[in-house]
Image (cartoon, rainbow, N blue to C red; front, side, top):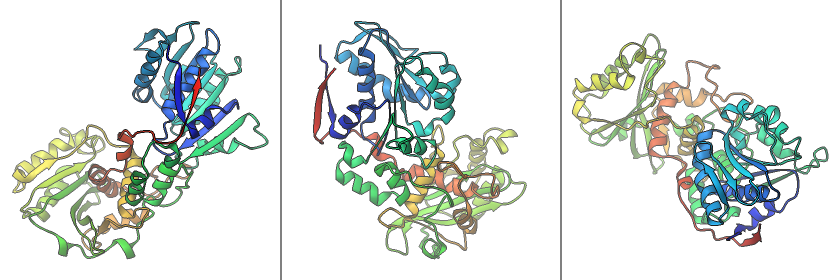
Length: 440
């Protein structure tokens, strides 16, 4: 029976810590899922009949992140007595302990069990009530332990838990922080590439595991002095053009972009136009304005935007907003030139904002997004004025200035499709850091 697993040095440091509650914040691709599985296995085999849980922000995330890796690990060691695919649970041989995967999106359903060990993965994305009102109590009658893992998401409740490590008032707590490089799973060249592509705060959070403070402006790198310029002179009527939509009634908006060589000499995104109809607008009206302004464009045009199809706007009346857009353009001089790049679901808001900020200014100072203030004044106003939700972890405050955020959202849908900031998370890397061996 194969009972050997290898951990990198930083993973071993966390694994060998005996504190009852441990907090691990790490940069992307640290290998925390692999380490969490070893923690679950160790806890499950310590005695017969133990209950061990892995909890992710949602049930679907738990399945996608951990389920297959867990099955592979346990099958490789011949640990599995019985598994339940619908319940995401596995009973182990030699004692009947059970490892289960759960989601915190319906945390009230997690009440009433006695757990011996718990992993809360990406805990910064889990509501604090899930821990304080439900899961903490599941460990009380067993004296169970917990491991919190994830990447920081601003200074929310995860930051407060991290601060407990080493604090004299919390002797049962220990905290660890490791960067992506320290994790040993990502080459230094890849991290340096990310440094050049991402804005400073995003890089520090995602790769250096820093609890950066996101309070204030959403698009904080933007300034008129560095990002506003006369860009229409660079417009190429034969090159690809982008129409960017966010669906709304007040205002009705769209942004127009083209990739050009910017005045700073770098290839980048030029916002060279917009539609902004402040009152009583609808999707067809926005399209007609785009046709009026850009009907003579000779090259191809791709439409980007809100994947939900505008449940707040015209879709209430006649079909989805994307249906209305296609109908308007089909009858126009642009009909044969238009195509669509719309995902099946919108990206997370924070990911979209990070993509725009990284384009506005990378951690190394490269500016690859500029706006023509004469032809896109409301884009400038948005980038200057949209603010973050106070006390949040990077969410836009939609209520503070309701006339803002829509046209910058539209721009963001384009930027994250063309220039996503999460490429490294989808790749597999060879572990190269020093390892420690242990036996369970």
